[in-house]
Length: 513
Ligand code: GDP
Image 1: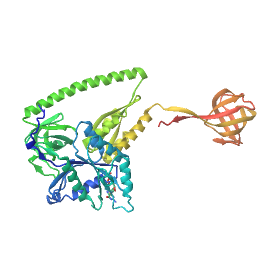
Image 2 (image 1 turned 120 degrees about the vertical axis):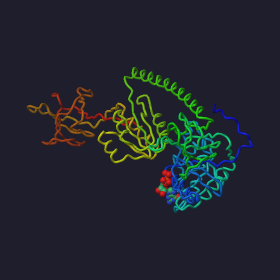
Image 3 (image 1 turned 180 degrees about the horizontal axis):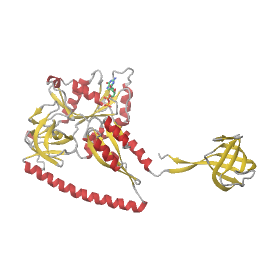
Image 4 (image 1 turned 90 degrees about the vertical axis):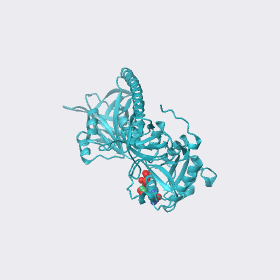
């Protein structure tokens, strides 16, 4: 089985810290990661073009630090939702010229909920007119009291642009990591977490895993979620093939039976047979749970159909650059389901939006949401021809806000009456072939040609209907405003009298908020 036997204290060795960079959009998470990687002389010495494997290693004074590449809290939350905890320290990027913003607060909350210490990187200090006290105050207002102000949180002023402060930030990370006394046992079978995974055309299932304990070697039998296999090759963050990898090492592995999901736990086991057995058991359990889940949904659906006549469904296809984002977007979207509209993610996957996505959307009346991916022009054109609603986003909550809006659009519209104005009939004329026309004066508001009307005599509504003609002098008028005279004819009504009030109104769709 996979029950963990305790590591003996003498086997525990220090391991590098694993860092997640979080913060508000545009505060410089990506730039900071890039700047950090550029200070990493070893990667340049190695001459390798840094390959994107979802995490990267940086060496500072001979000490390693591992950075998870997926910036932002989405991946972090999605992983945590799946029970994985892989971050030792969170770097909270706050742009000095912008201060604490909504996603900064979210990041603070997520890090606190996960009990992960925060180091603040106050970024963009190269900009003129920075008021860092304001940033510090805002942080303190949100429960982050920095050392300088008597608190415990380290704040490092940095510029991802000029590189200022980056060295200090890295040193502070090492210092904080030292306090955490992070240890692991390199002697045992490897365990870890899947950071991202994809199905590569040429190489088959490819997964990036973070080894959290033990050492993984080429040839090891492994289990990752509901996939298994034997490690055929391991590639590090510099794109180099390696034979073994110890604790806190991010590696890309080849040899799995299929692509696991981000957040899946990873284990090396003694032999293939065990790996296969574990996965078979897991799959059987999943099938059972799925069967139950399907039965439940159907019953609920049935119940709802009977109760309210029908439930509307919003089908969505989610495509994103990494599995972590697919999961995060999926989870957030499904949560939007309410009594009236059910949100169903009918397909989610890593990679760009393809022709087959458009076809699926067309067949199942779905909208497509792309997250950090863009379709080719050919695919875009196909979407247009097929009338597919295809939207791309960079920020998760923008996607969610849009889907919420789309859901409201699906609901039966609610209407309300809007009174336009009152017009008084001051004289009546019989016009041969047309009927009775009222010589009228608009008391307040206005009367329009396409309005509905209500005829009021002595305070009682005696007729409701439509206007058949509206004229100013001899000319047809679209609308006549208060203080002007006009000629009014009411459709199918020939009994206008002096003193009658014509109330004009329209029926308007209520915007849901
Ligand atoms: P992210 O959305 O948090 O990943 O932010 P980005 O790294 O994409 O940065 C957003 C914008 O801020 C980009 O235009 C960057 O060039 C700019 N930026 C990032 N860091 C700095 C910095 O230290 N100084 C200045 N002046 N601009 C920065």
